[in-house]
Image (cartoon, rainbow, N blue to C red; front, side, top):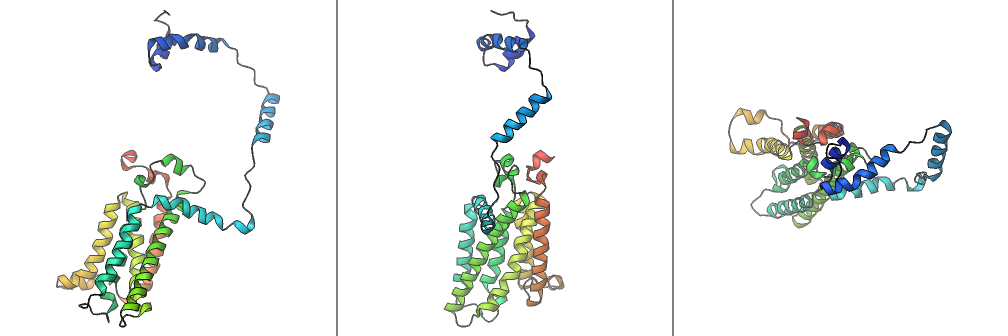
Length: 282
C-alpha cells in the first residue's frame, strides 16, 4: 500500500472511484511527472502548423446555382424546433373558424365580425409566442455553436409558422368563399391578414422580452379581446377610445407595426444571454 500522506495520491483518491483504483493509477502519474517535456522550437511549431494545414480539408462554397439551397436547409433544420402541437392546434383552430362561420346565424356581409376573422389572429399569436425560449432548445450549447446566428434561427422559425398560418388562412378563406356566395375572397383575406401579422409578432416580441410564452399569449390575446369584444360586452367611452385593430383603416399601420415588432424581437433574440433560462441570468 502506498503512503497515505502523499499529496498526489490524496488528490488522485479524491477523483478516483476507490482507493484501489487510486493505487493502480499512482505509478503512471508519477512517471508522467518525471517525464521531461520536449523543448518547443520555432521550427517544430512551423512543422506542426504545416502538417495541420495539409491535413485539414478546405470548406467548399456552394456553387452559384445552388446558393438558394442554404435558406431551404436552414428552414428544414428549424422545422423540428417548432413544436408539433402548434401545427395541429393551428389547423384545428382554423378549421373550427370555418365551421363556425358557416353557421346561418352570422351576418356574412360584415367580414370584420366573422368568427374566422377573429380566430385567425389569435391562433397565430399563440403559436408565435412559443417559438422562443430555452425549452425549445435543450441542447443550447450546440445551438449557439451553429454557423447560423440565433437571429437567423428565430427568423426561420417565425417564417415557417407564419407561412403555415398564412396557408391555412388562405385555404379557409377560399373554402368560405366557395361554400357561401355572400363571402368575397379578397375582402375576407384583408380582414384577417393585418391583425394576424400584428398579433403574431406582438406575441413573439413579448415572449422574447419576458422570457415567458404564456405572458406573451395573455397580453396579446387580452389586447385583441378587449378591442374586439369589449365594445360588445361592455358599454362606455373607454372601449371606443382604444385603437380599432379590426378596422379597414388600421390594416396598413398594423402591417408596418408587425414589421417593426418582428425586427425588434429578432434583434433582442439574437443576444445569447436571452437564450439562457431566467434563473441562470439572475
